[in-house]
Length: 252
Image (cartoon, rainbow, N blue to C red; front, side, top):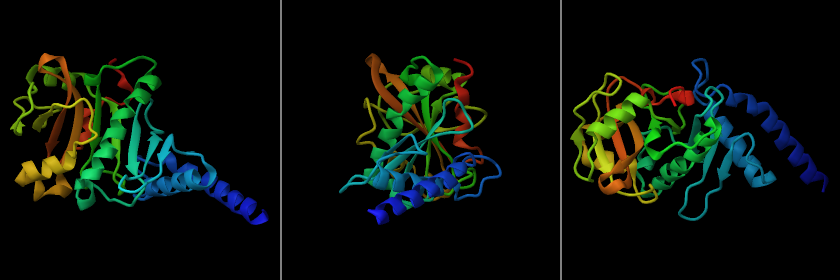
């Protein structure tokens, strides 16, 4: 009994010490492993105490299904981060092209309800985006998906010029935040079986050869016939994918 109590006390102390690391995530001064420290803490808390703290939610891994942690961003009112419980550096890591990684994207998409709750009102699917920055643009070396509002100007351009049926990759005719993106429509209501990074790597050979420069944004879409779907956007320019998000949803 004493051993278990002592172990719990040590774990609680560890959580208390590392909770401070949450405030570092995404900041310019953060060390690049701050997020990974938080993930480890959340995984320990979930496994031994039945608590996700300091994360919002922890899903422990089971056979064939990856574990993940959902973290509330300390910097922005409505942003959340979804990250695997295993050490994965970023988009350049082969493991993010594994079919099982679709579960991570689907969980990130489900977290849109928390974005709406933080804002205090419901947001349509076309107002929500998920973004992953390239190795050269990110601040953390643990793969993580940003979940937040998409910039209103981006949403309007996608409604106007985004493809309405699923098909091959095409270059979006309009620049988004001053940058050109390749775009592909996905005619599915969720991302449970959509291997986002695998689709990019297999469909765009020029991206496959430069995965450390690749930026990825997935935006909720309404396709032909009012069918719910998604737009996958990617480029490999020196501009963070996160720029297409509207942190705090200030325009909504």
